[in-house]
Image (cartoon, rainbow, N blue to C red):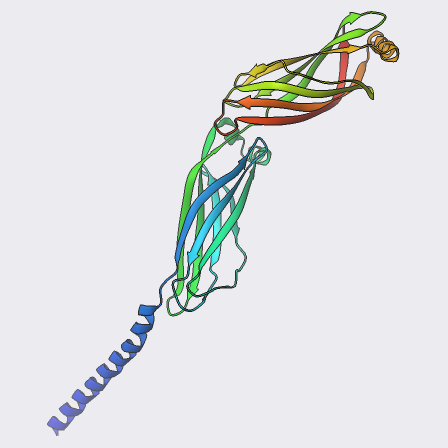
Length: 290
């Protein structure tokens, strides 16, 4: 009887081991042929840069290494500027990734400087800021269940500050029966850490709805970092009607309405912005001085 019980126990254990080995033999081959997808990044590329914004593309890759399709992962990306979390977003569901396919993802990222400085004034004091762009991938895979992975890109973004153009004064310098001459002083405030050279200014000046001048000046003006530099313009009025109107405005000693607009053509010592055009339009009131 004891020998019979021992034999039954042995057979039970033997069958149990066979069953377990069989299950593993079925499961392990499936796991061995299914691979977790690879993720990678080509980094964050700045595609355009000016005083208004920095535009770029964050490039990602998902490589499905399997002969069956997989669900598109949930992708969440974040952008940090220094220690400031500037933006985070989730990408929409992309459906399926085909077998043995490399899925490329390009995420456009825009950083408008005006909005950035309003929310984070401390960044306006910096010349460049380090950035970190991170993408987190949350996969749902056969047999493996959830699988997380992430990639990171780092670098620097220049913190450009748009120069401020102003119309500082309108000064009468000569009054004759045939003409009046005014010295108009515009100015540009350079808020950056690099030199700006003004090569040419195209402008139009309208006073009390009358066009006084349209022209340009090629006098070169150097605006040093954190410096306000004058841009002198000489305007002569020669038609009898405009001379009479100018006399009346000066003698009235009242403010005049002005609309001063144009474009500054500039070069800079910045490695990121070698040359640029700076359109401007200023509308306000000003007293003509003698």
